[in-house]
Image 1 (tube, rainbow, N blue to C red):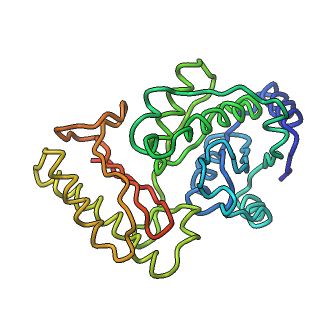
Image 2: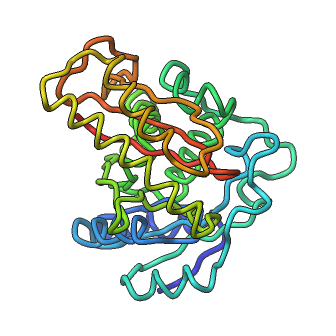
Length: 280
């Protein structure tokens, strides 16, 4: 496994590998890898000749008063995990190489970036799409792998790829959960034991909403109410930012639930913001 810091070196390398007929798989991350990331790496390993993992905490997608400075980082740990999984290259750029002095170019997917997390994190998805487009241009992957926990992010990136005619297949992979149901996230490292126990009510709420739908309830408001009522039982709940039932493609809120729709939530357990979703 090789660690590459320079964008031009990474680009030259992958372009030369593609000329040799190699298929490139790519897993973009902000590091502090967990089993969710590793599941993406394994998908890439199965489907490609070469797997590249990027590790870059992207400041553009953090808003004012968000957790950029305290976001967990441990490159040596990440490197060890990548090595164990058989990753071929880690792209580990410096901030100044990704955003050189005078940087002024941004990419925005206008409609899909609205609603859900977009309402509470202004500019977040503009930062995501900008860095992902840059990474796609540097790594030149055939396939890129993203987790469905960040469902709105996945849809935004799919739209960007379609709209800009990018030669990349975007592959959404299932949410990976702890045995007790908590969706894996780097931010879980912020949680104390008590906070983590409280966080379990997020998935419990989603399950209750899905059960109600499967019992025949189609009224979106009633399904959301049972999700909210369940999450409100969490002892250390600070805030429910949103519980929405949306169309799986447009992300527009639905009044009448249908199979394939998504219940998406964002919740603060004390000072940690957690997101999750479930498909009906």
